[in-house]
Length: 259
Ligand code: F6R
Image (cartoon, rainbow, N blue to C red; front, side):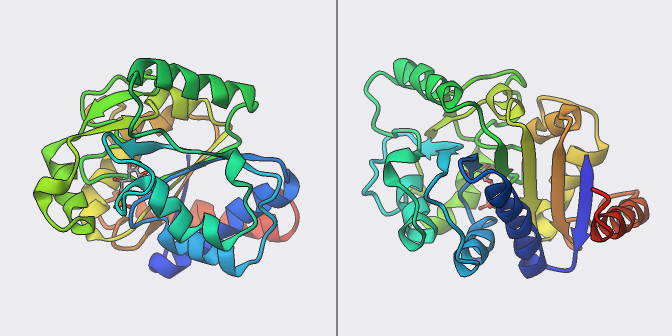
């Protein structure tokens, strides 16, 4: 796992956008896995600013609140169009976001998995992390091999996400979410985290044991995972100095065209 510790949210967003832009330029028909929430907003803003070509891309989002239709202001569907797709030349027909209104959820989840396979698999999956260590909505105790499924949100997640809703009671209790097994099949993973509130989860993800209690810890088993975190989110890591040192070495090598 490559760990990049940066100064703040803006630098995290710029570094993440650089990695995503590189993927898009190297493979214009890339399949990107996308995330929502507060963390990736700056990265999307940066991608819009870079004026990149999105026309050949296919995208799959990690999750959607169960019960919310695409027009609901707090749906992740709405979020994605508002924060990214409405501002770039993305073909809406190649945008995939779980259908929060699916009648037959099981059949829908199987179809979602099939669509990812038919698209050739995800090249680069962007991820955030919850305070309880979740990726997508794979809450503590969720299987590390799970596929896309209906999941119940943890109380902590409902509290955290209440900031996007008028009232806490409006936050849906369920979501349709890619499973850790789905996420682990992406060729590259890019997880972002910022702020002190994420420091415990980040320490557990990078330095803790691999456990379904911190589903993000499954990234330790991925052959190509990068984690970009700001100083505050990195504050509880024991080997901060080591990560900074190796990151500097890799950056030097990259500048010389060695990677
Ligand atoms: C969002 C998602 C979640 C968030 C996580 C962090 O699609 O899958 O795992 O990445 O809850 O949310 P923020 O970025 O709002 O702190």
